[in-house]
Image (cartoon, rainbow, N blue to C red; front, side, top):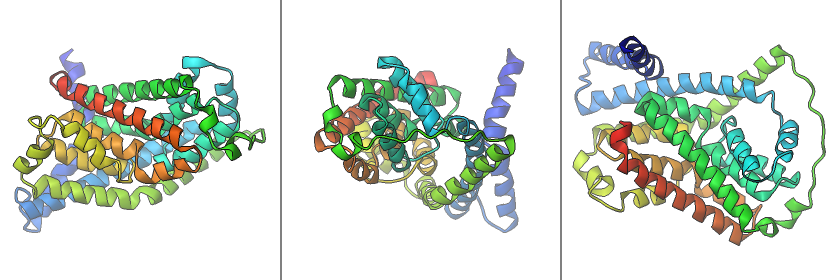
Length: 337
């Protein structure tokens, strides 16, 4: 058993967490006369290490996910989802969201396509909630920072939120609150050509390039903010606002996250820095979920497709779910960390 634990510890810290890279960068900076235990040296080390780690993991994960996704083009996906009803359909739609490496704004066109194809609105909302929230990339990256227990639990509760959210929307009979031009658009059922392994490889590589270009500056800015929080803002200030002594910390983190726009890759460095300053894991995750699932740009885009009542129900369900999840994680943090 001890051998298995040692192997997993090595995978989590040296392969996923790349602690060796952090040590290497620290040694290289010391050669140039920078003390990584001081603010400037520590900030530079954090910035270089987190950027390299995130982009390596991001590229690898997007390639794997996109290769898998090449077997499930939209036409095939619509056919598969159309065979199921009720909670089963919501669950499958939520699981589909885990293999779509998109931010919330990028998920909305697929949401519109699925809705136009005649899929129940509750099912398409389960996809829309899970897609930016719990993709496989988030599982691996969260694991590299917070450990396997937090990462797996985060994905499970995210999927539950997506299933419950979509089910509630369906039960409230919200179909009539989708804009008419989407409900009447219909879809053209075109069979996708069968791809060779080489074609799938090229598709996956193109997705890596496109995704890295799309998130590049969000990651850079996110890591920069994380470096500032990690090395320049006193822990006392952060804990007074987001610490466990503030009963509203989860709500504050969620509300602060909503106006921002980034995907999980850009928010992780900030979350890592906040956690290092003593912020509860639930508060950190609520901030991340607020940014990724309810960003203001995505809400504005979604308003073009749905009427205000449905939009308000969606935002309300997801926001309440995020807040509940945040408080639950804080309450049971001792079991996860």
